[in-house]
Image 1 (spheres, chains in turn yellow, orange):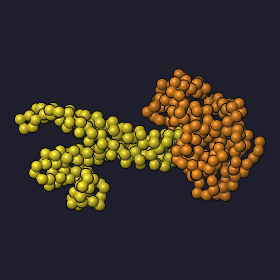
Image 2 (cartoon, helix red, strand yellow):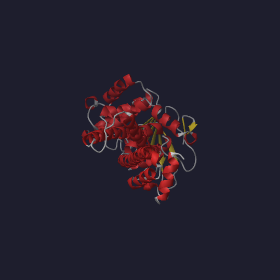
Image 3 (cartoon, chains in turn cyan, yellow):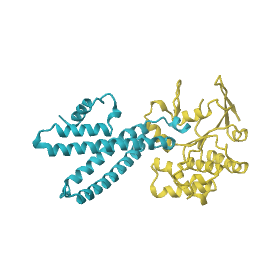
Image 4 (cartoon, one colour):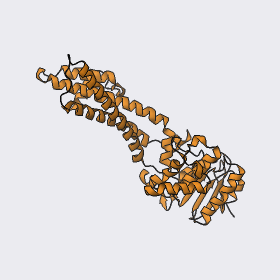
Length: 168
Length: 201
C-alpha cells in the first residue's frame, strides 16, 4: 500500500471522503494518529516519523493553498493584464508555484530552526537532532507540501478568463 | 470586416455596440459565438492558447480602455513587460522602454509608480507599453478618454506616423470624431442590427 492509498483509507475512516475540504488540519491529525497507532510495535518509530511527515505535508499544503488562493483573488486583474500582454499559461503557473515554493521553503526552514531550538531547550524529554537526515526530510516535506498547495491555485490562475478578470 | 495590412481603421459607434468586444476578439482575448476571426491569416479559434499568447506578445500591441498598468511596478517596468514576454534581449529592454517614454514625453517619470501619475499620464504609459515591441498590429480602445486636448494633439501625429511611416496596422475604437478622422477608414457599429458600415475616406 502506498502513501496515497493509506491516506485515502484513513480519510475515509474519518468520514470526510466526500469533501476535499476535509483535507485540513483535523483530517491530517486523524490520519497521522491512526497511522502511528495501527503499525506493528517494532516499527512504531518509523510510523511516528511517517505520521509527523504526513501531518506536516498536509498542513503546509492546506495552508499554502489557502494563502495562494487569497493571493489569486487579490490579483485577478493583474493576472488578466499579464495574460493579455502575452504571458502564457506557463508564466502565470510559474509565478504562483515559485511563490508557493518560496513561502513553503522559508516556512520550513524557520520551523526547523524553531524545532531545533525547542528540542535543545527541552532535551530532558527529547534529544536534539544529531544528524542532518531528519532536517533534510522535513525540508523535503515542506517543499513538497508547498508544491502541492500551490499547484492547484497555479492551475486555476492560468485558466482564468482574461476578459472577465480585466472587467473587474 | 477585413482590415488590410498597413491600414488605419477607426471603429466607432455608441456605447454598448461592441467596440471593446471587437478589440478583444481581434486580440484573441475573447471568442466569437458565431463566425471566425483571422489575424495575420490564421484563425484564432484554431490556435492553442500558447500560440495566441505568443501572437499577442510579439505582433499585437493593445491599449486597454482602463489602461491596466500594474500598480506594484514602476512606469519603466510596466513598459518593459511586453518586451519580456516577446523575448526581447535583456540588455535592450530598458533602452527600448526609455525610448518609448521619451516618445510620449515622460522620461523623467520612469521610476514613479502608476499611483503617482495623473490619469492622462497613465494613459500615455499604456500607449508606450503597447508600442514597446513595435507591433505589426496596434489595437487601441478609447485611447483618448482620459486625455486633455494638448495631450491628444501630441498623440494624434504619433499614431498617424506609426501607421504611415512604419506601415503598421492600427484598429482604433473610439467615440471621438476628431480621432476617427485620423483613420483611413471608419467602421461604424450599430445596435441591435450589428450592421457594419464602412466609409472610405
